[in-house]
Image 1 (cartoon, rainbow, N blue to C red):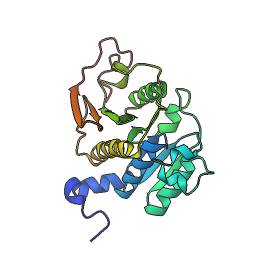
Image 2 (image 1 turned 30 degrees about the horizontal axis):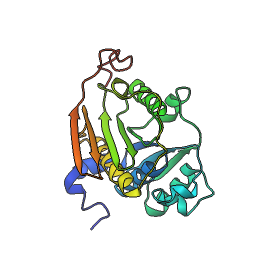
Image 3 (image 1 turned 135 degrees about the vertical axis):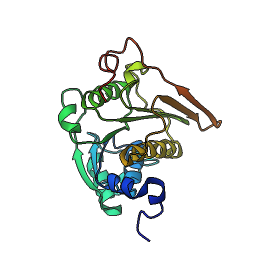
Image 4 (image 1 turned 60 degrees about the horizontal axis):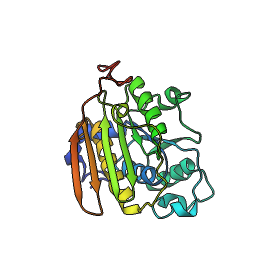
Length: 234
């Protein structure tokens, strides 16, 4: 049996071929990024673009397991080293900040972008970049045991409901981060394989401390300066 034989019945031979030829951008190589990159690499994604300007600290190691092996390296380089050890997936790294001044050149050629960031201002910049470039965006955020995700393909977009400001530097447990990353990676694989993502137009929120689950339909805002201006871009 081949390495991907257990998942080919889910994506099909053509879908697996598309996954192998694809390029996925992972913006943020912390807890979410480490888990998403691992899952996408093991699933056979051809190339990962890893973007992060930071270095790991000891408090990261409860959820950012690849960096334990190379704590002195930049996070994106450490993650690329890990991916090369576990798979044949190629990696490109961008060890710098991400913003509106460099998004077009950074994301060029990517088939999907996965939001593994920790603040809303950067997420909104990423949202604008993806919309302008026609790249599907898989959003995710974790705060303690609370996780949330949605997938943006055209309209609605993150600008419709996500508020500027706010950063998530509070308590964090690896299990919650891994659960969310699994959801994000699954959405990315469905997009890359041509299967169609499940959470386009829906906001999913799960409180892992209580088991409560919400899946709320999203409607594009008439005041959104991004997707309301060009709602048919995708």
